[in-house]
Length: 437
Ligand SMILES: Cc1ncc(COP(=O)(O)O)c(C=O)c1O
Image (tube, rainbow, N blue to C red; front, side, top):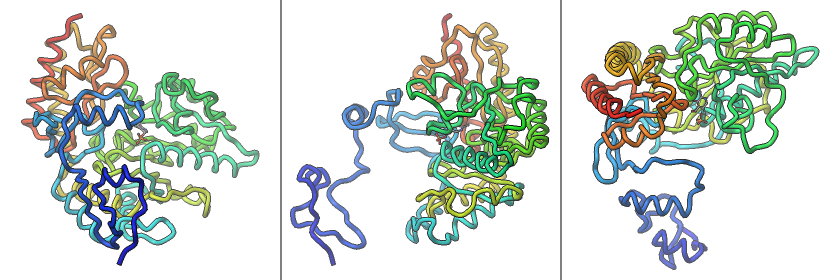
């Protein structure tokens, strides 16, 4: 059963489609093989020609990954201490995740939120069971989770008499690139070039307790913050700052949102950083590690506010589809079965202590080792730029990130092995030893 394909001739050539090709209801394998390996140069050429040039990419393309290692198109091996920016939290090609993905892929990928969805309902149950009585909204990324949070804060404010709109956010925080999330991101470099931002957002400096206490007032519908500033240098906020946020939000009946997109889903050594601090927000946003590399985001809303979004007020076509939820469920199952949270805490102690030895060795270059769990910042002296070090680390076979101008960001997979940490520290020793300033 099939019908004639009417496609442009160049597309026919590219995909190897024959003139009399038919559309089959099940499989439609053409000559085009997306798994055929291209060289880095070929990939770069295609990227330059066909992909918007909004990313400053490093000169490498990866061919496959295994656990805490990646392999590039030339077969060179790298230790992955970046995890796709804190995403592939159980490493690459984890057998149980691959099994969950492929089993679900053979059953059902997507039906939309017009219908009930077993995988979505079960994942929501698992997230709530983690220790947050409430309900979940699913989306596809961190910025979308934060957009949902911003809308929910506003909707909460609109129900007050008189209505209120003000949202308090943290200077130098990061919440994403869509318009609302960008507007709540208090960084000129992110907002520059787009004209007016969303109004009614007031920024307070991180850990400015008095500033936060007075910014949250009777006009405030909500407060959004990352408990650990990820992009801006891996800076854990102080407990006192979070305490005052909670107390003032209670007094003013404003919603407290923790953006745990980067630190959440185990990276802090707890499922969520709020558990480390013992301060319970009204809303948690998450993404990154939630799907272990499969795109999914979520908003966890405390029971008390779970009816703020009424039917039709928010939605997503893809959000929480069968495939994404099956994988994310398996991520949580694996975190439990492999006792990953204990492993994160032990690994964080081990790695931080090794890095502190490097700090003593290179006291003229490293100011501080800071972070929470397996999100760690190596804070370099102000005159040392982290950016050029990333390419040097690549040459040494180590992938690390950057957060702020002079901070190297380490985000290894949560199941990183001890031997891999030892090798990574050896490479960091060479990297930092080689800095001339
Ligand atoms: C704390 C935080 N919030 C939001 C985002 C945006 O997430 P996404 O890139 O998935 O939209 C990020 C991404 O780095 C983040 O670190």
